Length: 257
Image 1: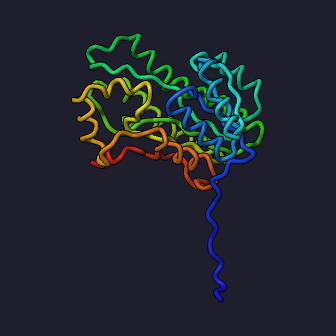
Image 2: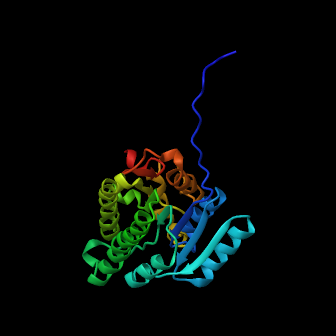
Image 3: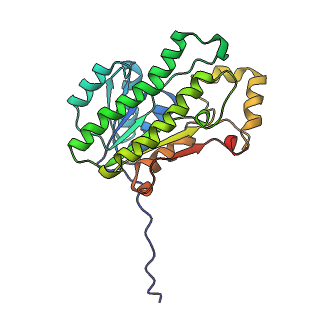
């Protein structure tokens, strides 16, 4: 009989933890909220569309999870501050709300620039800041997860604005990790490749565009929202307790070349 004591795998369960997911009404945000709830977290879903987040929250509850839906425009910083002042501190933030305006750089307008950078960077920064202030005041350790992109690691045709925002997010994430380490708050990004969602599906109707994408995803298929659920659960859980200031790239090999 062996007297070797085997190390125990840290739990990925999230029971007793409060999670906030922005842009939670559809696509990636919806999937991540469902994944966190499946692992026991109480999930607060926020977005601008009441109907969408109510539908997601109801589905999570019907599946045995805990969820609430709150209408919030994360680009309105007064709304953001009011939201956090009215809610208990969160252990987990999925900073997911974002947008894209694919255009050649010579065609980008100032309005395009403001729309993409304000939501993808400014809103993400101040949502994280407000969340962290409440965590620190409540002496809660936790995990910030910012949804970046493979385009925060490489360039892309007609993606100058999007790349600018996602590269900025990566730098923001690293500095936040350094600022927050002493509080036991971790900060990381998830950087997906092209994920098939209701928003992106119309682009893949163009056979030439679809083939150009598949040529760069070395595993030979588009990403699905399920491909990101495990990454979110891992970064939210104790299994990643030594992981901060980095990017979990879920890109099928796109950036390996």
